[in-house]
Length: 82
Image 1 (cartoon, rainbow, N blue to C red):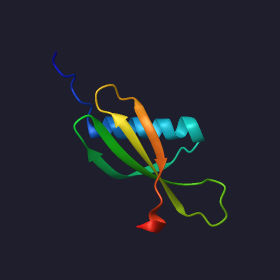
Image 2 (cartoon, rainbow, N blue to C red):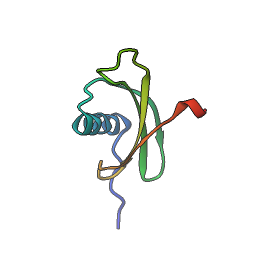
Image 3 (tube, rainbow, N blue to C red):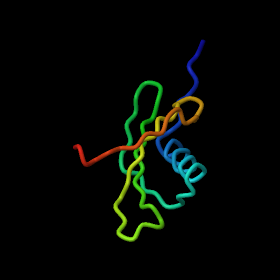
């Protein structure tokens, strides 16, 4: 069975940004990192919580299926431990 064509990184990033907005209401995010694997795109988005007095940048990591474009997972990236 032929393998379905993998979506490109721009499409994966757009999917991750839309997913973040739909779940959290955060409309402004930036692409910080992208990693490609055989079957997935790993997209890290940076964002600022809109109502924080002294906002710090936060990060979430999205695993996007390379064939279907479905977001498989969303995790918090804690950069304080790096």
